[in-house]
Amino acid sequence: MKKNLMLIINPAAGRGGYKQNLGEALNVLDRGGYRTTLFFTSGPGEATEFAGEYGEKYDVVACVGGDGTLSEVIGGIMKLKNPPKLGYIPMGTANDVATTLALPKNDTVGAANRIVKGQPHPYDVGGFGDDRYFAYIAAFGAFTDVSYATPQNQKKILGHLAYILQGAMQLPKIESYKTRVEYDDGVIEGNLIYGSLSNSTSVAGIVKLREEMVALGDGISELVLVKDPGSVEGIGEILASVISHRFDSDKLIILHTRKAKFSFEKPVAWTRDGEDGGKHTNIELCNYPRPIEFIF
Image (cartoon, rainbow, N blue to C red):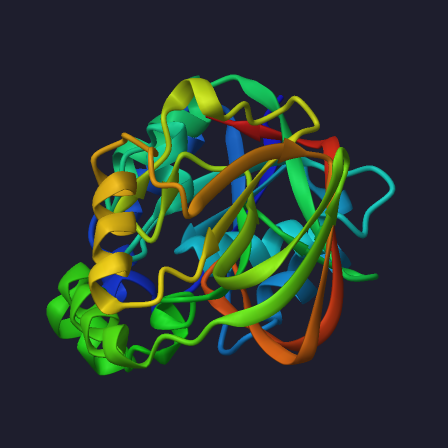
């Protein structure tokens, strides 16, 4: 007897690349034992609505799209008493979650095969405030608005290069924020240019944390803080330290924690999984340990 699979498709993701080989991907799912129902989103938030309203009727809820689409689907699943398993067909630009899970990117057939042949794994989900979630990262500060500030037409034409160009434009105007961070083992105060809580080895498709630093279902998230270096040259040194995997800058702090509360003197803009997370003076983040099973 076939299992029921809900496939939520974001037609705007990955320059509309879902159209290529979608029929073959659906055939792979069918031959793999899934009866698939398609849902197409037409705007922000619809993937959450679809997953939250219909998800319990399916054995697996999967999505075709980028990290933002996946984040929305997880937000819907987290509202369910009996959450289905989660599948992912990555069709975005940065694809940080796909990089972390070693899933085929912009390859509908390959990713469909992984849903059929993969195994469900417990997966931690991030909590953002009282009622919102994130799949792999919530962050503020330097470069964090690059994803949603990059015009959609540039993403379609230039792909990942659009992010790099947008980030380079921000170097001269990076701000620092007087911040208090309360986490499991203590408190850190200082002027920060960046802060995040994450569960991923890849950030923005460029920065890679070492695999031994991250476990996806251990109930622990990675807290990354970057102190103000005082100059553009100092920012370059920090980026070089991270990109080269040395992580040896005295301005860089990487810790492990279950929760973190950030407090600022004025509202600060945040992102959730590369999407606009709003401005906050105080925000509490946490790790929800293993609430869903992710097939990969």
